[in-house]
Amino acid sequence: MVINIRRILVPTDFSETSNHAIDKASRIASLFGAELYIIHVMESSPYKLIKTDDPKSKEKVVLQKYVMDKLEGITQRITEQYHITVNTLLGEAKVVEVIDDAVKENKIDLIVMGTRGASGIREVLIGSNAQKIVNGSACPVITLKNSPVNFDMSNVVLPMESWNNSIEKLDYVTSFARNYKANVHLLGIIESRKRADMRKVLTLLNEAESYLKEHNIPSVRKIIASENVAKETLEYAQEIKANLIMVLTERESRIGSVLAGVFARHIINHSEIPVMSIKPAMYHAEKVTLKKQPVHNRKEHSNINR
Image (cartoon, rainbow, N blue to C red):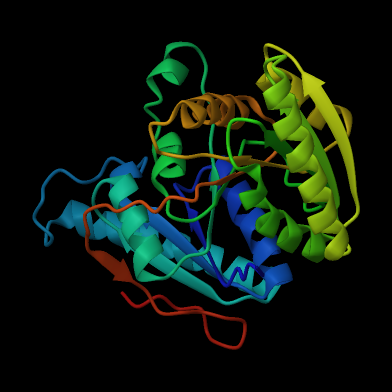
């Protein structure tokens, strides 16, 4: 199945990390011919000006104008540099709820977002908005850390795990490999020495190789067997200078999904390389109200209505 990425959403809090995410998403949008949606959620704003829920309050008006000016500046830069259509969204509620609603309302195909990762107790609690969005999103999510943007995606790592149906990632890796003219590194993951698991991984690798060959995507394969497959996956990705790692995450309570969740969470939290998380199951959350600004592109004057 051909995956069409037509709408890409990027949350921003105007930090350096989210600016990198915007540039990465803009590059992807230009290659796929997609529209870019940039969203800011008032709750996450670092500018502590709101002191009341009254929409007519002076503090709130000042903050809204400041945010709109920031979004307008980003829109002008992106349209001039990448020549893509940019939409801006301003939400005011819980971050995860607003983004979930924006995905549904605008039929988003991909989220690209910055994350500062996690360590220690924060990783155990999995309390970050980034992790919640990855877990709950109905579409794939690319997470990246605060590092210089690398637009090249010539090497994509695709872990093939025995505990879930890794084949579901092939449609996405094929789409990205075509647009970026990338090589795909199929990485067979074996956490146990059970013959059944080894046979399953070999079967997955064979199926993946055949699929990619049919679509004229170059690939290589490697198998790693270890008690810490997530760590070795990251080491392998660093060794080959990968530009993207794709992982499959699920919400079901099956044992396999638990293993997949632990593996994916470690990769997302510790990878210095962008990670694309794909979750087959749909997620539904409560609707919230968004204030959508006009669409801007390079042929239009970038002016957000106030």
